[in-house]
Amino acid sequence: MDFTHLLQDQSRISDEDVITFRREVFEDMLVSRAEAEGVFALNDSVEDTCKAWNDFFVEVMVDYCVNQAKPHGYMSDNNADWLVAQITKDGRLDSNSELELVVKVIERATQVPTLFAAFALEQVAVAVLEGNGALLCNNELKAGVIGAPEANLLRRVMYGVGAEGRLAVSKEEVEVLFELNDMTIEAENHAEWSDVFIKAVSCHLMSAGGYHAIDRKEVMRREAWLDDTTADVSGMLSKTLSSVGDIMKGGFLAV
Image (tube, rainbow, N blue to C red; front, side):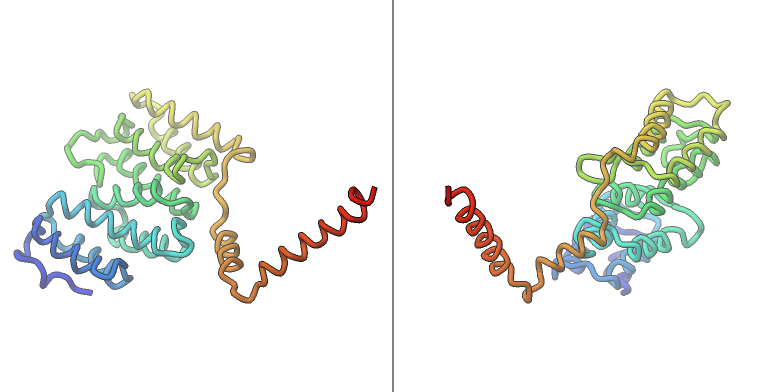
């Protein structure tokens, strides 16, 4: 879907444009694949954007990738693959809004595919090691050094899944962190990095007894059972209660 004809000025996206886009996209309270792709295309093609656009862009994509897939709150493998393809057309994240999008998806979702979480860490790692990319928004990023902002982003990615955070850290994620640590071992990294790294490795080693969100497929199975109108739930319960009654009559009440 092409939204460029809605722009007042083809070279920039203004606050007024964002109001128009909100009416257009959320009119039916749903974000379609075509609308999501149209918003992404506009974000890629117009460099001069207002803050309201960045907020709108992230909101639309999170809504599409997390809230509209079934079950709600779980990011599907298909949506994860689609999102990665959209934001890596040039090989990596190339804007702050795209990086914020990746982190927001992880924070808002109950569960995301393991490879998507690792992908998010990899993008931060690339920015840290090369000193450019999405994190270099105010020219404060120094190549090969993990500062406080980078450590905070890593923490958000590592522990953002689920409303209460998560305790399990995947093997893929830990591998990214070890590589990042090895390549910056001689650098004057911020103390926050040591805290993030040590806790992440500890969580990975202890993850067998930690928190795990219910698998998306299991949630789908449970929802399907609840939605199955052919299942005689009342009949099943009545039979159960009847069996309990028989036991009581033949046992406790018969004394």
